[in-house]
Length: 282
Image (cartoon, rainbow, N blue to C red; front, side, top):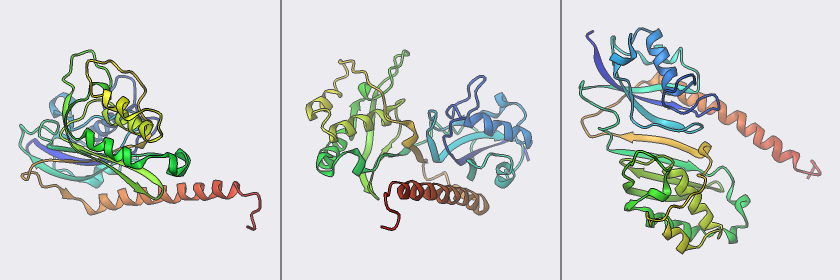
């Protein structure tokens, strides 16, 4: 076939060995792993000519279930051929052909992130001390158009920090807090910094006025973001002209990997829970 551009949907787990998704000299990244495999299997020859582009970049330790990238390839894609060479924690599971001028970054209309707070609610403090209602109220404050300068990493290139937040929700599942964010675009570390401050608010470490003051972009407020290990790029949406074709074998590979990891970590959870008991017979 003649060179064609395809949009791919992938998952990856932000393991320690990966220094984020974006290519970096002398460091292993998600992009570099994909490019190495695409070259090895003859889908691309020169990276520069492939116009390889991720729709969203993620930092080290951040994972994804529905990340996307575009690439001009030289032959019809067979997803399991690509997956056969990729590490188990990375996998392509859907694709569609797109016009040559299509950009995975610019054509995305919605980015959906989930942040899973690793510490159970019962260990964040006594339930009476975690004010879930005020945290949900803060999430509502974050919706709409705001200047998120104090909720993002400080950049030196004068980037515009105004963003439109479509939805910010706080959910409780199995004794854990889960944040859900939807927007067309996010600033660097924006989600992790929001999570940090909303958690502080819920634990009464800052006041509601302190939280509202973060919307004042004229104030330069510095602090560390929340742990990146809890962040997942859940999905990226495009307009109705983009129709992904899911590959059953690739989906099965992905879900089997998740299941095996769930079993391993479930065993560890019960192991350490049991070890906390003074009397095993009880």
